[in-house]
Image (cartoon, rainbow, N blue to C red; front, side):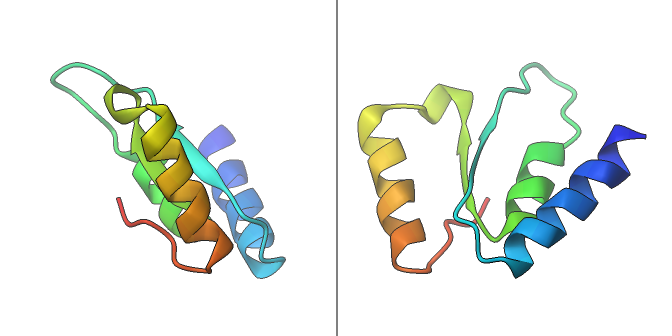
Length: 72
């Protein structure tokens, strides 16, 4: 199952202090929230696709470089 594997990989990357950013591509009325969950497990940045701009990415990267993940 890919979801448990993704959670395990996220935990491993978080333990190794790998800086990460997750872009949530879900659209529509029904959303599973898996991208936000993955970002939290990674202790990484999170952006919705609609928020994806150069400035938003730069903000997430800056926050990650200071060790302060952006919450979902």
